[in-house]
Image (cartoon, rainbow, N blue to C red; front, side, top):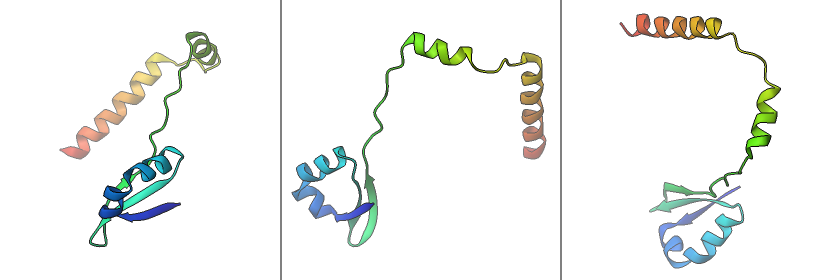
Length: 84
């Protein structure tokens, strides 16, 4: 759930607000009652080891390179025709 806070609240209580963001809360910052910005936690990046990546990739379906290229070419050609 997002909580609305004023620009003044953000200025005066920035430490507490940032701690709340760190714990997962979202905020909408307003100025004169108008929504101006959002504060939300950044998603943490997760390190994936090479072994884990290779294990996952090995289980993916094989890709037919010629068919893939034909599909991409078809989409590009359609977009070019549409834009002309």
